[in-house]
Amino acid sequence: MQTERKKLFVGVERVVVKVGTYLLTGEDTPLDSATIRRIVSQIAGLRRDGKEAVLVTSGAIGAGVLELKLQRRPRDLPGLQAAAAVGQTNLMHIYRRYFQEEGFAVGQLLLSREDLHHRRRHLNVRNTLCRLLRDGVIPVINENDTVSVEEIRFGDNDFLAALVCNLIRADLLVMLTDVEGLLRPGGGARPVARVEKITPELESLLYADSKELSRGGMRSKIEAARIVTGSGGMAVIASGRRENVLPEILEGGEVGTLFLPSARKVRSRKSWIAYSCLKKGSIIVDAGALEAIVKKGKSLLPSGITGTEREFRAGEMVGIKGPDGIEAARGLTNYGRREVELIKGKKSHQIKAVLGEEPYREVIHRDNLVILR
Image (spheres, rainbow, N blue to C red):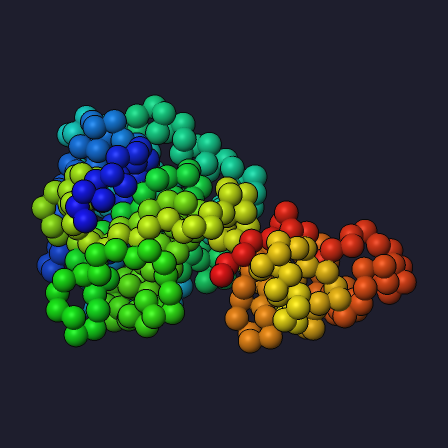
């Protein structure tokens, strides 16, 4: 198995490393400097070995909570934003100092969901990251918690790290946490070594993380792995408390849980549609339309639509659900919800008679469709 892993990692050139809140915050201090120094040293080692590395870090709110001597993580948005403002300063100060000691400059990017939702801003972020990497700078990324509101939050930094991984077409996402990997309930401390496909059986292993300082848990990490592997990359969940965990992973060691690339790979633009765009609503289709979309690669026509959910406008991203209510695809719609409700069940040639014009024969063209299952 180790030989197989070593072969898989031979071609890895660009790595995104995500570190969680509980690796960075100590019991009695705002930040666990020893852990941060160890992770920084390992990332610097990757750079010296010729790898490009991006760090996605949690911990700003957690560090702020401890710095402000709060009893628990704030539950109100202003409180979260204030804690992030205090904590982010401390977090970046220590990263900058330790990376400088290793001989590397750092560049800070604070991102909101809208930065990756809007196509032009999405491309601008990618260009900035690629330039930093080309110049030998270590990008350090966190969610812009000081300005983000609930509607445009990433939800957790696992999701943010997965989007960054796809954004720069990284080969590998490593999510460092405080457990050894994906653990089976009652299966002891040894993690699942390898996941070839994220199945419903695997998802039954998910569990919620009850720790108050962080938003993520194993559920969010598996969802992040789904996003990355669906675009052709690999993902690893491993313990950041393990000595030399990053070089061990890159050398093909049996460390953590490895998620292999999906057989169906999503191109860059379609990855943006599926994961970076904010979903505004859903379109419900019948079984025939679902089969045509998923199995035959067809566009979504009005004849197969049976209903809609939530408001959306032309050009926005919507989910496509089958009769079972499960989302099977996502895409950019040519029509808003009002128009879709008027033309649902109709033939394409009837659109003009219903709407008074026929700008598009398809509600969603196959070039703007991404299959999720």
